[in-house]
Length: 64
Image (cartoon, rainbow, N blue to C red; front, side):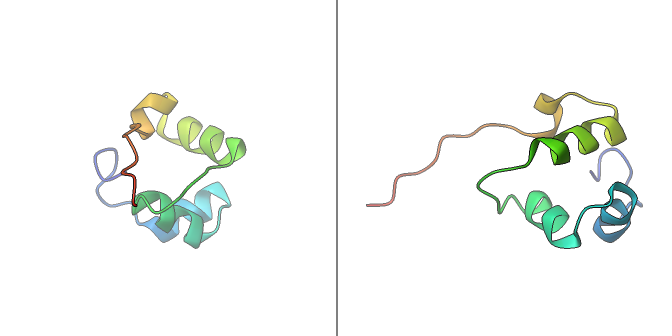
């Protein structure tokens, strides 16, 4: 997000995409376990990018 528009706040993005600020905060902070397809579509359309440019899949560390 910061790379695309350094002046864009999470709250402004949430408002423009009609998403909750909590959702944007969780995505920005990488604190989510799943994501809604509609949310991904909105983000890709807004930033004019593909899903692979928004998210990077990393292995999950096993705790135990």
